[in-house]
Image 1 (cartoon, rainbow over the protein chains, first blue to last red):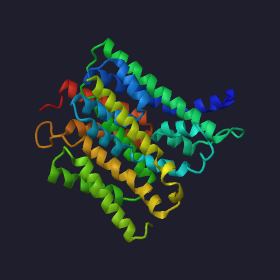
Image 2 (spheres, each protein chain N blue to C red):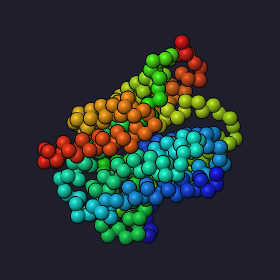
Image 3 (tube, each protein chain N blue to C red):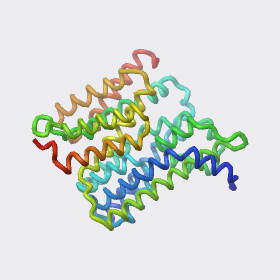
Image 4 (tube, each protein chain N blue to C red):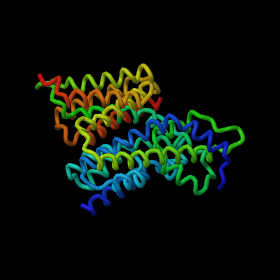
Length: 230
Length: 109
């Protein structure tokens, strides 16, 4: 495959801010995992290596600790990650003909990596897919190393992690603010807010995610179809 | 426990990969469709709004401390993000503030 040193250097430079975010967040995940799930550090590493989906992994810590069933955890993961399905749409054409590299480009596609891919241009002499692959691989490594370091630290010391699970709420809040900057419409946010509150009042908190998402997306699609998808 | 954790890891990996690969497998021909682009724009706001609400669903606003720890930490997170737009700073300081509030119990009236 052979990447030039210059290409690797520019990928590291572009990935810098994401590394600074992924390592500490991965660290927090590893720490929470060993404390709440009660399994050795290697399972936190395995989950990061195999799953590689930050928000779902944080959510899974709480669900695993509660002993929730495999199907429910998979369903929650799917709901959380279905947004990725729309990321691929805009890079569909650009990755055509990437061959086996496409597998890793897809496997390593996250919110942050997607943001880099769509906002930072590759160096002039480089193939775009190579540049994307390097950035994605660097980010993946930062997440896996961070999780491992956090899990090892969690085993070595008894750090009080009470309240640390707020990191998940904060992560979603930050992603929400980013969405508000991008999508300059009030309707989808307001629709989801109202649907969420009504669902909690009517059905309680336990199953609110699936019910409120179905309700909101149903209303969003109905409204879109009525307006001709404008 | 061993079978359980591995089943969870592989089930999570499978559904995550499916969601990431879906457009490449199914949507190639529809990528330019207006309906798909409409959904691509509208779905993330809906899901993220509901995820924030989901995270806060167990906060008891009618009893002490009346959801104040979550409210303050969320305001810190969003405020910092509006100012600096640095996700690590927003999440780190927001979570740190929440941990400090609940561990010291200063708002337990």
